[in-house]
Image 1 (cartoon, helix red, strand yellow):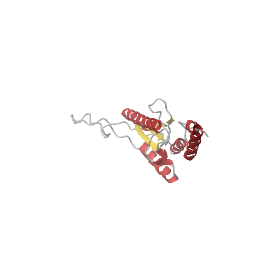
Image 2 (tube, helix red, strand yellow; image 1 turned 45 degrees about the horizontal axis):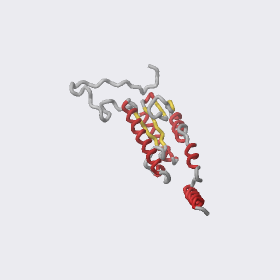
Image 3 (cartoon, one colour; image 1 turned 120 degrees about the vertical axis):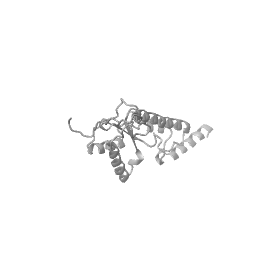
Image 4 (spheres, one colour; image 1 turned 45 degrees about the vertical axis):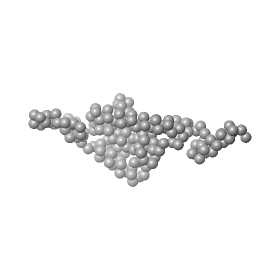
Length: 187
């Protein structure tokens, strides 16, 4: 047996231990969808059943949010723990090609942070739902109830939001009232 054959056999044994045949990881990763995943459809159907209407995967906004609720000025991102480096047990870096995966996943996380900051600067409320929060039935129900409550909660006024100083504080003037968009009836 030649050295090349021994090396191939060793690589095959290593691949079998990792759960993937040699060359199949690339194919498996290419089959992962970017939208309409099971956790997205589950979340959307819950919100729709609760009476919320939304747009999905809107490409007009940074990060193409999974759910856009214009009435509530809220965007929901439903993130996979692995692809967005959540930090839970599901987000470990693959053992092979570690430099590539570390760089790629770090770029994803940094891009997410930039996009969320940009959306918040535009006045949107950004909510992230993680894949691990939807794994068990009990955790899923709890998280989806909390998501609904976060969405329908009134937005803080500019004065109450962190990082915003009262514009008229020096003159002692009252801040202008914000319009109430919570009523869904006709004006």
